Length: 212
Image (cartoon, rainbow, N blue to C red; front, top):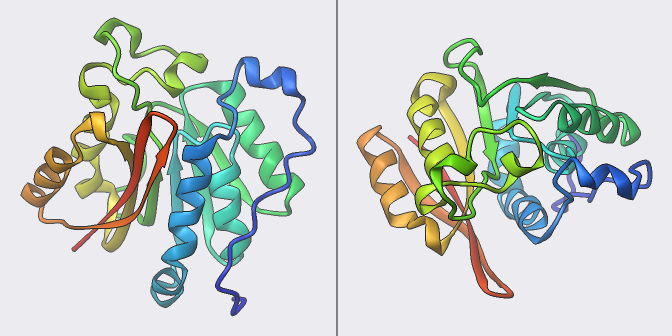
């Protein structure tokens, strides 16, 4: 692997702006997650992950950035939005990253204890519960009560799908009550660490990592 301490931002020239009517366009939260992974690059290179999964990959910029930094890691992504899976595939291909996108809800169908790294930029906007559960672009932002209904479902799956020495990266905003997430993961036996935090307009965005 390269000795660089920087992560490259994937090229996105292949994407037609009209595609973002159907797929979440990379924004400050996407790039904050890439910055968090870059900040943790030495830690991750020591871990030397074999399998990395991004849940809800959208345009694919985050998992592609990871794949560019870790060319020997097998990268997989999921998204409930089929058009997002297609865009993730083309983004990875355009940047010479091997990626296996899967059109599915979260991660329930994967083999247990498989992933060394799991990354999630969830739908975190506080909405009514009935706005959750779609398969179009709304699924990328509608988070339900506390903006956490989808996130909490994934938290329950992490102990089953994350390798014993694996690391889980999660982006949240303050409205999601991150301290509650830390306590939930503590019950599951995970330590937590704040990797990065940034104020973006009216949002306080942060990335937490969880590990044993």
